[in-house]
Each structure stands twice: as structure tokens, then as C-alpha cells.
Image (tube, rainbow, N blue to C red; front, top):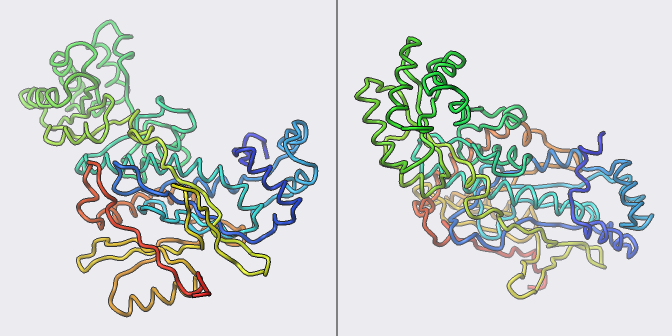
Length: 457
């Protein structure tokens, strides 16, 4: 395995130094449960969207310390020799439960639960957080944009506005949030995502005239292509674009507008196309769009949107602000016990949580419940609630068992399923969830302690 493919050093130094110290104190092998969650949703988010789980499992497949990694740790004296010996043989052997990609989440929702030894689970913290914090932020922005688009397709064009590898991850996350394709070829190759793209202004400027540029593009890509009409004068560009396609014997596929007052331009261009008889020619718009700009274009005769900067940066919220905390571990008596931070404004809830969502009589989500206790108790409670006629569904799925990854959660098919699930789940949220304005979460989260969570009671 090439060192460039190892994911073990995509981490913070203190993960390794903690394991080193825990090995010395003989607590590294204590059975532990970590949960990955958000303490709250950002003010402008009514719900978050789960994306990145598949990438985490891909990263876990490559999470091992290569000889090059070991040499680096030793040379720079990052940890002791005993720790280096541990890392040399490291493999994750625990269990991971998670929300499915495409599901939505709320305050304290345990998007991912990792159960293993302290050392094994501790080492995963940074890579899990870096993936989910990025991908959930992008997917949440994408979901808001597709809500604003009212079924008109949105396409990712943001690769040039972010880190080159983040562009691939953002494209994947945007698909889960409802986007229809991407300009990023690596994302298309890796995840089977539909790729789109024709030409930029430089292609028009390359040629001696706009007519020559349009003819060259149509000769190469066919009259069904999309021609960029705002390099010079938009009305003249539209007329030349339609003429160039007809000279090739067909109607033009679409025109793209990338500047100016997009609402006004869309109406003008649509009117001009109709007067020219190009009624089937579509209009796509780009130019620094976000969900609010897309919403403003709702009444305009636009057929699709290309979104860049605002998508790949989470539309003003570049991180989902998720955290990874120890909530349970084996105590001195050999029994599992809940642990929690008491820090002001950063406190946590002790004990392992099992998530379920309650739906009302009309089929809309009404409450997110987090049950603290054993899985058997949780299952019994769920069954009793269902027997009473309450619609309540568990949210987490087991994705890794004893270190073995369930491969249904990775690959191109997982992206498709995630997108389909999100469409289904989002449709079952209450109407307030679809608002773009700031406000309370779409549904409340309630934490319920089961008997095993507090045996003394």
C-alpha cells in the first residue's frame, strides 16, 4: 500500500499521544463508546443532512500505519516506542453504527457511534469529524438549494472554489442533498455521478468572432449543447446561438447566463428565444448562486442552476460543528458506565444513545427521541410504542461489525440510495423545515433514560 493512500495520519497529534499515555496507564484496552453529534444546529438550519458516512468507511479501509508512517513517528519522536509498536499492528476491530446517508439529523442526534477499545476508537476521531463536518455542511446547503429550486435541477460547479480533493467530496455530498450532477470528472469517475459542462468565456474569446466560437462548439458537441451567451452582448449572443444551431439542422439545447441581473435577463432571454421560435431551448443560470438567489429566481423562466462557491463552502456554514465524545466506558468494576463532560456550554449527556423518530398521524416527523440505555431495552420500548399504534422508526444502522465493513454503505450505489432516501425523508418533515429563514429546528429532540442508564433509580 502506498503511503499516499494511508489515512492514519489524517489526524491530530493528540490522538496518538492520548493512546500512548493510555497504554502506559493500562487503560487503552478499556471498552469504550464514542458518539459523534452536534450540540445544536446552526441558527439558519432547520435540519442537517447526513453525508460522508460512505467516505468514512472508505477511509477506514485504508486506516493503517504504513512503514513510512511509522518511520515518521519514530524520527520525530511523536510517541514512545511502545506506542509505535501498537500502531504498527493497528487495525480497527470494533463496531460502528450510523445514521444512513440522506437522513436528516437534529440536536444531539448520534450520527455515528463507535464501540471498541479506547485506543482503537480514539484514533478515528479526527478523520471521522473532518469528513462528516465537511460533507454534512455541503449536503445541508445542497438540500436548501434544491428546496429553493422547486424541482428545477441544480448542478455542482464548485470544484475550482475549494481544495482539489474537497471538490470531489463536495460533489458527492451535493448529490445526496438533491443535486443532479457535477462538473467534476473525478467525482464522476469515482462515484458514478453524472458530469456536465461545455465551455467557458475563454473559448469564445479564443475565436475571432462569437459566431465562430458557437459554430466550433456545435460542430464538436452537437446542437443540443449549451452555449454561453453573455461574453459580449446577451441579445446578440442569443440570436447568434440560435442561428448557429439551426445552421447545423436542429434547435439549440440551451443557453447559459452567467452575469447581470439574472431574473431580468432570464425573462428577456426567454422572450427573445420564443420570438425566434426556439421555444424548446432551455435557460440555465450560474453566477455565485445560493439558496436565496435561487429562491428569488423562482418566478423567472429558468430551467436549471449551476452552483459553485456557496455550495462547496456550505452556503455560509462551512462546518456542521459536529463533535466526537466519549459517553460510556468500562469502569473499575468491569461494567460499562456512562461518562460526561460538565464543562459550561460544552456539557455532554452520559450513556449510549439509540435514536428513533416519531411520526404523527399524517405521516410527518414529530419528534426525535434519544433513548439512553441498552439495545435490548431500546428494542423493547420501540416494540411497545409500535404496538400502541405509534409510528416510530430507529435511525441508526450497523455499518461495521468486529472491524468488518458492510459494503452496502460504500460505492456509487450508496450515493444513489442516499439521494433517494433524502428525498423521501425530507418530504416527511413538517412544512416549517422547508423555510429558508432562521428558526427553531424542524422537530424537537427528547432524551429518555432507560432503566439500565441509571441502575440506582
